[in-house]
Amino acid sequence: MPSPFPGMDPYLEDPELWPDVHHGLISQIQSALNPQLRPNYVARVESRIYLSRDDDPGRRLMIPDVRVEVRPKPRTGKALRATSVLEVAEPLEYPLLLDETIEDAYLTIKHRESNTLVAVIEVLSPTNKVSGSCGRESFVEKKLQVLASTVHFLELDLLRGGERLPTSPFVAESDYRVTVFRRGERKQARYWPIQLRQKLPMIGVPLRGKDPDVPLDLGAVLQTAYDVAEWDASIDYASAPNPPLNSADARWANALLRAKGLR
Image (cartoon, rainbow, N blue to C red; front, side, top):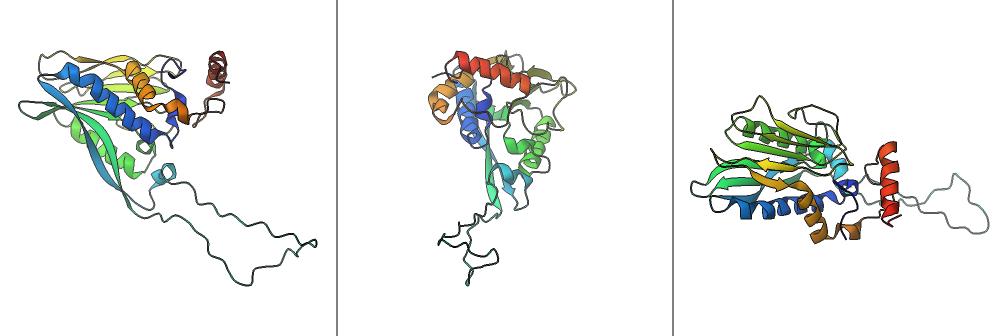
């Protein structure tokens, strides 16, 4: 079953599902690019590794809040006094928030003969958009390194939630955004502000010298990834997405899903 939405599916933004969505998007972008890149270039998946501290604010998107449940008191026909306590304390279980090594996957394009890095394609994760998080610090550091080099940088932000990156251009308010920073043109960037109700755009992936850009149809990439991973099996379209939509988009989504028989 294809996604019922014309562009980005807001139900895919759920932090619990996003790791699989992120993996699927990276994989399908690679599959879409490699036949067009041959014979001179190749796209490869690589990972950026960082340490998430126990006080990392991004942890709330990776580890659920600690919840302590109180067992109901047995009913014996006579209510126990409110001040009654157990004679012996019972243990509780909770997750240990220890330092954890995190891997963020991204895509690189390299010139095959020289093995020179030509472009980096990043798909943002929720932790990249949490202020003060280790994931955000790691991402921004890597991005600044690339922008200071002669490598093209492509940033795909398909998440409505979180804070915009300080290194990203602010041109217009939008639900989603795609930015292409070309080498040699660091003082300006090509920027696609995308609304929920719009289709995802076709973008050009820059290469070396006079080699023409390679077209990348983000809408086709998302739909293929959706079909291959069968994300509809993990989505309840009768409920509201996480994060929630604004009131106008919620009404639009409700009508859309009703028309498709999903509500």
